[in-house]
Length: 322
Image 1 (cartoon, one colour):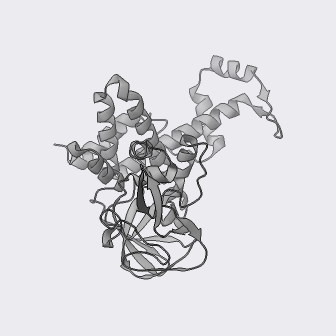
Image 2: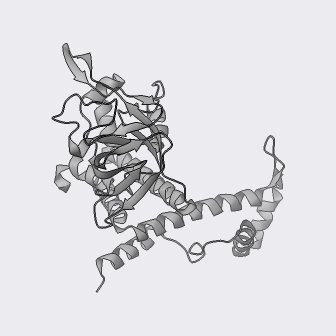
Image 3: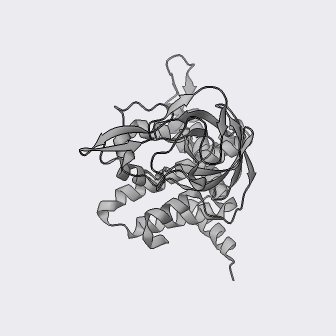
């Protein structure tokens, strides 16, 4: 009888549908080209070579067959990375299964959105796998702070601290916030479990496409830390992170309130944010210290059985999954 781990591995292998050829890691482009050409019918090779070479401005002419091989090389490399990452991270694999199940049961009207969500998930996980394989360091790109300010909203004055700006130098981190920053509404923000809010810099490219007319400097989403190399799909609740001389615990995803709409002057921003699946994450401060832009982030400890931030976000967003 299959164990849960064996089932996940089988489902992943079947879903990604890696062929015997694709299951090997090519050692070089030359080896890849030779093997691929050996698999192609001679007539097809002649047709491809008939097109000769193509020139790209500023670059030397390149044989069409080389271009085709490069594309195939990159595509199946990504598929392997994605497959292997799911096999090594069962909880991420389960999230992928849930996305597929949602897509199958979705109404025709919602199917486009779920398809996009699945595609985004594959891209994010593949990029994370690439970063880990290449040893791309995790780090803080920007420290952002802001104090409460009064703004007008639907004829009323409300206080908000969502407007953040980057600061230079080292900043002191305390149990409830960081130096120069203060939460406005402690009923939904702040406290020990929400002392610091972090948002991945990788998400900014998505939002620049979604909001092409909006300036998006670091801190635009109200985050204290703009990070690189940490994504919700692979970060687990309870992960311990070391930044500068301070230490943090990942506590929960950010669930947006109406003030996000105030920040972007868009009443639909909360729905957009929820639909994007890019919530960022809150941190508690387990050891006070100092941090600064450019500081590396070290994963001090992890419980692999704990849910990921993405999984927790889905659970909180959809009461039916609780």
